[in-house]
Amino acid sequence: MKSGKTTKLAGTAILAALVVVFDYTLKFSGLKIPFPWAPFLKFDFTGIPIVLTLLLYGLSSSGATSIVACIAIIARSGDVVGATSKAIAEFATVSGMAAGLHLSGRYKKAVSVVAGVALRIAVMSVSNLIILPSYYGMPYSVAVGLLSVIGAFNAIQGGMTVLVGYALYEAYIRRVPTKQMKPTK
Image (cartoon, rainbow, N blue to C red; front, top):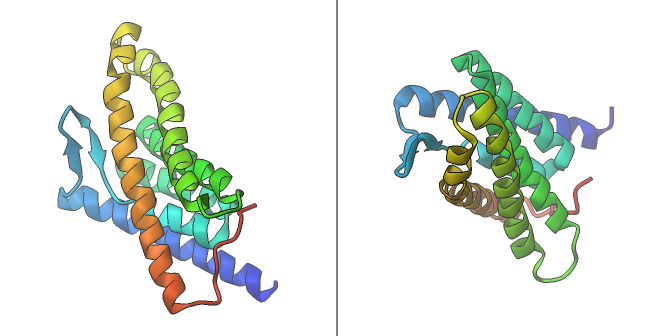
């Protein structure tokens, strides 16, 4: 195995472990913050290491980290639907970011932030239109009515995740200048 592949594997594993630590710590400490208009939605920091994984190692590594988040949430709670929704939301965010990172020019970062948040909102809107009626038995009209609230939550959560992830990435780059952001594969 080449040194680059070993670094990518080790870095991905460390950030995936950090996702698990964040999830368990926030859950058992009671520090997850409920969204005021829909308290069943809660803010957390588990997406930040997934964003860092994208920026440092690429989309495939952030996909693996999203899967680890899903498995950890299932192991902790037994909630397959909630865990899968969380993983889908985070992977949609980094997928949108990855698309934005393929652009060249000075707006690449801004486009990746907007694309990540926009894709998260779109994917989770469609996902909730399927999950809420079929799994939770909610009338379809109620699910449609909740889309604006769910979209607002995903905009705030996604924006926070992406912006904090970028801030940590840029702090890392200032200290380890040999690792530069490149388009993901």
